[in-house]
Image (cartoon, rainbow, N blue to C red; front, side, top):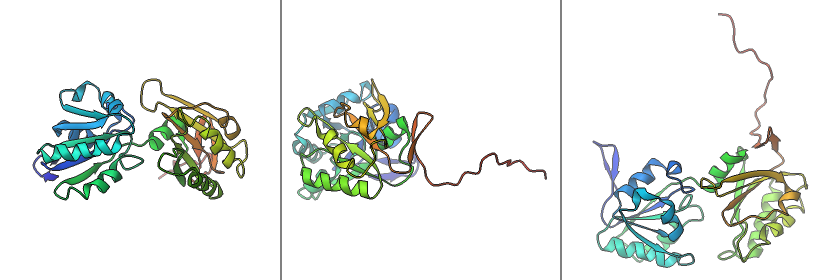
Length: 265
Protein backbone atom coordinates (compact mmCIF):
# COMPACT_ATOMS: atom_id res chain seq x y z
CA UNK A 1 0.00 0.00 0.00
CA UNK A 2 1.50 3.33 -1.06
CA UNK A 3 0.54 6.71 0.35
CA UNK A 4 -0.27 9.27 -2.34
CA UNK A 5 0.68 12.64 -0.89
CA UNK A 6 -1.28 14.74 -3.41
CA UNK A 7 -4.64 13.08 -2.78
CA UNK A 8 -4.05 12.08 0.83
CA UNK A 9 -5.08 8.53 -0.09
CA UNK A 10 -3.43 5.13 -0.01
CA UNK A 11 -3.04 3.55 -3.42
CA UNK A 12 -3.74 -0.17 -3.70
CA UNK A 13 -0.94 -2.08 -5.37
CA UNK A 14 -0.77 -5.41 -7.14
CA UNK A 15 0.14 -8.49 -5.12
CA UNK A 16 -1.52 -7.04 -2.04
CA UNK A 17 -4.53 -8.31 -0.13
CA UNK A 18 -6.69 -6.09 2.05
CA UNK A 19 -8.52 -7.82 4.88
CA UNK A 20 -11.48 -5.52 5.40
CA UNK A 21 -13.70 -5.27 8.45
CA UNK A 22 -17.09 -4.26 7.06
CA UNK A 23 -18.73 -3.59 10.43
CA UNK A 24 -22.27 -4.82 11.09
CA UNK A 25 -23.23 -4.69 7.43
CA UNK A 26 -24.76 -1.35 6.53
CA UNK A 27 -22.57 0.91 4.43
CA UNK A 28 -23.20 3.78 6.86
CA UNK A 29 -21.39 1.78 9.56
CA UNK A 30 -18.32 1.02 7.43
CA UNK A 31 -15.24 3.19 7.81
CA UNK A 32 -14.25 5.54 5.00
CA UNK A 33 -11.03 3.57 4.55
CA UNK A 34 -12.96 0.31 4.15
CA UNK A 35 -15.23 1.80 1.50
CA UNK A 36 -12.26 3.28 -0.36
CA UNK A 37 -10.38 -0.03 -0.39
CA UNK A 38 -13.42 -1.91 -1.67
CA UNK A 39 -13.92 0.69 -4.40
CA UNK A 40 -10.31 0.28 -5.55
CA UNK A 41 -10.25 -3.52 -5.40
CA UNK A 42 -10.47 -5.61 -8.57
CA UNK A 43 -12.04 -8.57 -6.78
CA UNK A 44 -13.88 -8.88 -3.46
CA UNK A 45 -13.85 -12.24 -1.69
CA UNK A 46 -16.12 -13.18 1.20
CA UNK A 47 -18.69 -15.38 2.86
CA UNK A 48 -21.84 -15.47 0.72
CA UNK A 49 -24.00 -13.58 3.24
CA UNK A 50 -21.41 -10.83 3.71
CA UNK A 51 -21.20 -10.14 -0.01
CA UNK A 52 -24.99 -9.77 -0.12
CA UNK A 53 -24.81 -7.26 2.75
CA UNK A 54 -22.50 -5.05 0.68
CA UNK A 55 -25.51 -3.99 -1.38
CA UNK A 56 -25.58 -2.61 -4.90
CA UNK A 57 -22.61 -0.27 -4.62
CA UNK A 58 -20.04 -3.02 -5.20
CA UNK A 59 -22.07 -5.39 -7.38
CA UNK A 60 -20.10 -4.30 -10.44
CA UNK A 61 -16.96 -5.82 -8.93
CA UNK A 62 -15.83 -9.38 -9.42
CA UNK A 63 -17.33 -11.09 -6.36
CA UNK A 64 -16.09 -14.51 -5.23
CA UNK A 65 -17.83 -16.27 -2.36
CA UNK A 66 -17.53 -19.46 -0.33
CA UNK A 67 -20.11 -20.86 2.11
CA UNK A 68 -19.73 -21.20 5.88
CA UNK A 69 -17.10 -23.64 7.17
CA UNK A 70 -14.85 -22.98 4.14
CA UNK A 71 -12.70 -20.29 5.70
CA UNK A 72 -9.38 -21.78 4.61
CA UNK A 73 -10.60 -22.16 1.03
CA UNK A 74 -11.77 -18.54 1.10
CA UNK A 75 -8.38 -17.31 2.27
CA UNK A 76 -6.45 -19.37 -0.29
CA UNK A 77 -8.72 -18.01 -3.00
CA UNK A 78 -7.52 -14.51 -2.08
CA UNK A 79 -3.88 -15.47 -2.57
CA UNK A 80 -4.63 -17.20 -5.85
CA UNK A 81 -6.34 -14.07 -7.19
CA UNK A 82 -3.52 -11.83 -5.96
CA UNK A 83 -1.00 -14.00 -7.82
CA UNK A 84 -2.91 -13.19 -11.02
CA UNK A 85 -2.01 -9.52 -10.47
CA UNK A 86 -5.40 -8.48 -9.08
CA UNK A 87 -6.03 -6.11 -6.19
CA UNK A 88 -7.92 -8.28 -3.72
CA UNK A 89 -10.14 -7.41 -0.77
CA UNK A 90 -11.38 -10.04 1.69
CA UNK A 91 -14.42 -8.88 3.65
CA UNK A 92 -15.24 -10.00 7.20
CA UNK A 93 -18.13 -8.87 9.37
CA UNK A 94 -17.29 -6.54 12.25
CA UNK A 95 -13.52 -6.23 12.58
CA UNK A 96 -11.40 -8.75 10.67
CA UNK A 97 -8.96 -8.98 13.58
CA UNK A 98 -11.64 -9.85 16.17
CA UNK A 99 -12.84 -13.42 15.58
CA UNK A 100 -12.30 -12.74 11.88
CA UNK A 101 -9.95 -14.11 9.23
CA UNK A 102 -6.99 -11.78 9.71
CA UNK A 103 -4.94 -14.28 11.72
CA UNK A 104 -5.69 -17.16 9.34
CA UNK A 105 -4.61 -15.00 6.40
CA UNK A 106 -1.26 -14.30 8.09
CA UNK A 107 -0.81 -18.00 8.87
CA UNK A 108 -1.47 -19.05 5.26
CA UNK A 109 0.48 -16.04 4.03
CA UNK A 110 3.73 -17.68 5.08
CA UNK A 111 3.30 -19.81 1.95
CA UNK A 112 3.05 -16.67 -0.20
CA UNK A 113 6.02 -14.46 0.79
CA UNK A 114 5.59 -12.23 -2.28
CA UNK A 115 2.09 -11.14 -1.23
CA UNK A 116 1.68 -8.39 1.35
CA UNK A 117 -1.30 -8.22 3.71
CA UNK A 118 -3.05 -5.18 5.17
CA UNK A 119 -5.82 -5.21 7.78
CA UNK A 120 -8.51 -2.53 7.49
CA UNK A 121 -10.26 -1.96 10.83
CA UNK A 122 -14.03 -2.24 11.21
CA UNK A 123 -16.63 -1.72 13.92
CA UNK A 124 -16.95 -4.91 15.97
CA UNK A 125 -20.20 -6.11 17.55
CA UNK A 126 -18.98 -5.24 21.05
CA UNK A 127 -18.84 -1.55 20.06
CA UNK A 128 -21.96 -1.34 17.92
CA UNK A 129 -23.98 -3.49 20.33
CA UNK A 130 -22.87 -1.41 23.29
CA UNK A 131 -24.05 1.75 21.55
CA UNK A 132 -27.49 0.21 21.05
CA UNK A 133 -27.76 -0.61 24.77
CA UNK A 134 -26.30 2.60 26.20
CA UNK A 135 -22.78 2.62 27.65
CA UNK A 136 -22.01 -0.83 29.09
CA UNK A 137 -18.30 -0.86 28.19
CA UNK A 138 -17.15 2.33 29.90
CA UNK A 139 -14.86 0.36 32.22
CA UNK A 140 -12.78 -2.80 31.94
CA UNK A 141 -14.38 -5.55 29.89
CA UNK A 142 -13.50 -8.79 28.15
CA UNK A 143 -14.89 -10.69 25.18
CA UNK A 144 -15.58 -14.43 25.15
CA UNK A 145 -16.94 -16.54 22.28
CA UNK A 146 -19.16 -19.50 23.16
CA UNK A 147 -18.38 -21.27 19.90
CA UNK A 148 -16.53 -24.50 20.61
CA UNK A 149 -15.73 -25.24 16.97
CA UNK A 150 -12.14 -24.08 17.47
CA UNK A 151 -11.94 -23.76 21.27
CA UNK A 152 -12.71 -26.59 23.72
CA UNK A 153 -15.70 -25.93 25.99
CA UNK A 154 -13.50 -26.61 29.05
CA UNK A 155 -11.34 -23.62 28.12
CA UNK A 156 -14.40 -21.43 27.49
CA UNK A 157 -15.73 -22.36 30.94
CA UNK A 158 -12.43 -21.38 32.61
CA UNK A 159 -12.43 -18.05 30.81
CA UNK A 160 -15.98 -17.29 31.95
CA UNK A 161 -15.06 -18.15 35.53
CA UNK A 162 -11.98 -15.92 35.36
CA UNK A 163 -13.96 -13.02 33.86
CA UNK A 164 -16.57 -13.26 36.61
CA UNK A 165 -13.87 -13.44 39.30
CA UNK A 166 -12.20 -10.35 37.84
CA UNK A 167 -15.49 -8.40 37.88
CA UNK A 168 -15.25 -7.56 34.19
CA UNK A 169 -18.16 -6.58 32.02
CA UNK A 170 -18.40 -9.63 29.77
CA UNK A 171 -19.30 -9.50 26.09
CA UNK A 172 -20.36 -12.83 24.64
CA UNK A 173 -20.03 -13.54 20.92
CA UNK A 174 -21.63 -16.57 19.23
CA UNK A 175 -24.00 -17.30 22.14
CA UNK A 176 -26.10 -19.82 20.25
CA UNK A 177 -26.57 -21.79 17.04
CA UNK A 178 -28.68 -24.65 15.75
CA UNK A 179 -26.30 -27.14 17.35
CA UNK A 180 -25.55 -25.06 20.47
CA UNK A 181 -29.00 -23.94 21.58
CA UNK A 182 -28.30 -24.34 25.30
CA UNK A 183 -24.82 -22.77 25.40
CA UNK A 184 -25.98 -19.39 26.68
CA UNK A 185 -27.90 -21.12 29.48
CA UNK A 186 -24.76 -23.12 30.32
CA UNK A 187 -22.69 -19.93 30.37
CA UNK A 188 -25.22 -18.20 32.65
CA UNK A 189 -25.12 -21.15 35.04
CA UNK A 190 -21.34 -20.80 35.27
CA UNK A 191 -21.59 -17.06 35.93
CA UNK A 192 -24.35 -17.51 38.52
CA UNK A 193 -21.89 -19.39 40.72
CA UNK A 194 -20.30 -16.05 41.61
CA UNK A 195 -22.60 -13.32 40.25
CA UNK A 196 -25.97 -12.37 41.75
CA UNK A 197 -29.15 -13.18 39.81
CA UNK A 198 -30.19 -9.51 39.53
CA UNK A 199 -26.98 -8.39 37.76
CA UNK A 200 -27.89 -6.22 34.77
CA UNK A 201 -27.43 -7.81 31.36
CA UNK A 202 -28.40 -6.98 27.80
CA UNK A 203 -28.37 -8.39 24.31
CA UNK A 204 -28.67 -7.06 20.78
CA UNK A 205 -29.81 -9.00 17.72
CA UNK A 206 -29.01 -8.17 14.08
CA UNK A 207 -26.82 -5.22 15.00
CA UNK A 208 -26.86 -2.56 12.32
CA UNK A 209 -29.10 -4.63 10.06
CA UNK A 210 -32.81 -4.85 9.35
CA UNK A 211 -34.66 -6.02 12.45
CA UNK A 212 -32.17 -4.74 15.04
CA UNK A 213 -33.48 -5.42 18.55
CA UNK A 214 -31.91 -4.49 21.91
CA UNK A 215 -33.13 -5.63 25.32
CA UNK A 216 -32.06 -5.26 28.95
CA UNK A 217 -32.69 -7.97 31.54
CA UNK A 218 -31.18 -9.60 34.62
CA UNK A 219 -28.74 -12.50 34.60
CA UNK A 220 -31.51 -14.76 35.88
CA UNK A 221 -33.77 -13.69 33.02
CA UNK A 222 -30.97 -13.96 30.45
CA UNK A 223 -30.55 -17.61 31.32
CA UNK A 224 -34.03 -18.32 29.92
CA UNK A 225 -33.83 -16.11 26.82
CA UNK A 226 -33.61 -17.59 23.35
CA UNK A 227 -31.00 -15.93 21.17
CA UNK A 228 -29.42 -16.71 17.81
CA UNK A 229 -25.98 -16.60 16.21
CA UNK A 230 -26.53 -12.96 15.20
CA UNK A 231 -26.89 -11.88 18.84
CA UNK A 232 -24.26 -10.24 21.04
CA UNK A 233 -24.73 -10.56 24.81
CA UNK A 234 -23.51 -8.22 27.57
CA UNK A 235 -23.20 -9.14 31.26
CA UNK A 236 -22.61 -6.24 33.60
CA UNK A 237 -19.98 -5.82 36.32
CA UNK A 238 -20.62 -4.66 39.87
CA UNK A 239 -20.31 -1.13 38.50
CA UNK A 240 -23.11 -1.53 35.94
CA UNK A 241 -26.68 -0.31 36.37
CA UNK A 242 -29.90 0.59 34.55
CA UNK A 243 -30.17 4.36 34.09
CA UNK A 244 -33.44 5.45 32.50
CA UNK A 245 -33.69 2.22 30.54
CA UNK A 246 -30.06 2.22 29.39
CA UNK A 247 -27.31 -0.24 30.34
CA UNK A 248 -24.53 1.89 31.86
CA UNK A 249 -21.22 0.94 33.47
CA UNK A 250 -19.83 3.70 35.65
CA UNK A 251 -16.34 4.94 34.77
CA UNK A 252 -15.74 6.12 38.33
CA UNK A 253 -16.13 9.87 38.09
CA UNK A 254 -17.23 11.68 41.23
CA UNK A 255 -20.20 13.77 40.24
CA UNK A 256 -20.98 16.90 42.23
CA UNK A 257 -24.59 17.79 41.66
CA UNK A 258 -25.98 21.24 40.87
CA UNK A 259 -22.62 22.95 40.43
CA UNK A 260 -22.96 26.47 39.07
CA UNK A 261 -20.14 26.69 36.52
CA UNK A 262 -21.03 30.28 35.57
CA UNK A 263 -18.99 32.79 37.57
CA UNK A 264 -18.81 36.54 37.51
CA UNK A 265 -15.67 38.02 35.98
